[in-house]
Image (cartoon, rainbow, N blue to C red):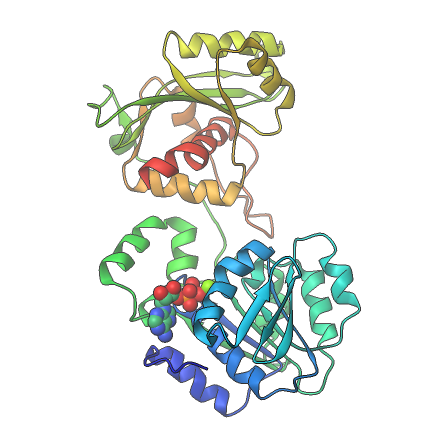
Length: 400
Ligand SMILES: Nc1ncnc2c1ncn2[C@@H]1O[C@H](COP(=O)(O)OP(=O)(O)O)[C@@H](O)[C@H]1O
Ligand SMILES: [Mg+2]
């Protein structure tokens, strides 16, 4: 294995502890970019070289693509190309002469494939993204003598299965855990760390920067501030402006549409339409909604309309008219909320005072504290959803 000149103090500390003996389950948790993956792969290499060559080993992540991106590319550098070769299509690799199976937890067939295995070692990237059944099964397959599991994760909700059933029971289990914080990683440029810290707000800051297992509580966007985010005049334009409309579709539930101007400095929600079929006691048809969209667009050249991905019939209706390009929105709720929060925090997401329903919802939109996982209260979330669609699908690319 290549000799790496330097490790962070924390990484060295882990290797020292590991010399004294590893446990059956070995977990590194904590902030993003804190050096967990790096040192866990170094440890994986050191360990595997001392293990039998004729046993089976596995490396897993949410998908094969994330496994490659987060781990395999780095492993190639750390171990050297002579010592680590792999084929994603064969889902197999060889590390220091040991055969390594590669699996994406979410990929179809992963579970049934693992069910029949007898494993010596497993490496898991981002464990909180695994489902519990898969993880339990993986552990049950680690049945060779001295079998071990290595894994990394960022913190999540304190009610997450991995926290409750593993971390909190560490004393009952043959379990080692070590926390890494972003400031432990002395290889990162100070300015980069400063920027990274600004990218996360609220619950995401606590988890991904401070490394805390904490629940999402209170308002989803506590940083929304009428003084800062509501403008009475549209700000001066910087660079080429593009116009977009984002839509959260509902028939009985409200349908919310926002018209955006995006330039190099910020996104402004210029105006919006909000229609509640339940409140008005009359549901609109897709054609009537289409007219609402046309009215909102006026004579502006709209680069693209971003629509709730589940609104299949309305997407077809918009396409049929041929005026607007349509895109299904990225609907990963937590990622979208994190991105929207970052844009608000940096003052890059602004609202004209006409956007009454969006402004009203900012004051109500909350985390659902009765749920065990991160969930928002599914009321008054319609403008919130269309804003999130726009931020995650379009604005993030230009403003972050
Ligand atoms: N020992 C090291 N030597 C050089 N760079 C390192 C080292 N450890 C971490 N890094 C740098 O820090 C970045 C983040 O480390 P990583 O292990 O991916 O963090 P985490 O898994 O905690 O998010 C890496 O991409 C790499 O640039
Ligand atoms: Mg990592």
